[in-house]
Image 1 (cartoon, rainbow, N blue to C red):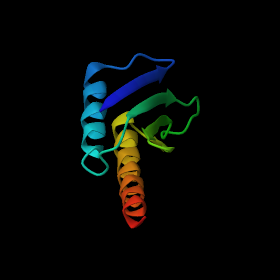
Image 2: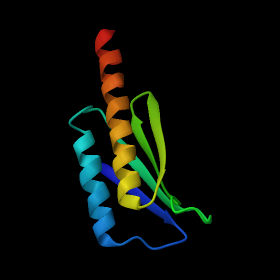
Image 3: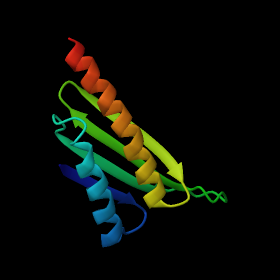
Length: 99
């Protein structure tokens, strides 16, 4: 799957890019009509520990699925976001199969 990654106000390291790419590649097992995905990584300027934001937009025919998660680390946020996407893609697949 083609993943466009953007980090806002910081540079992302290679290990994080590879981690997110592996997570996103697994999503194709749940719904095979995924076109591509956009991943936005942001750091919120707050005193709270949970200030890392991962926003993922998955482009599928006829619709986009957007998930936004805030956690302590980018890895945790990406993991939570891909779990939510997995559920959304499975729901979408069932909906398409029903028609």
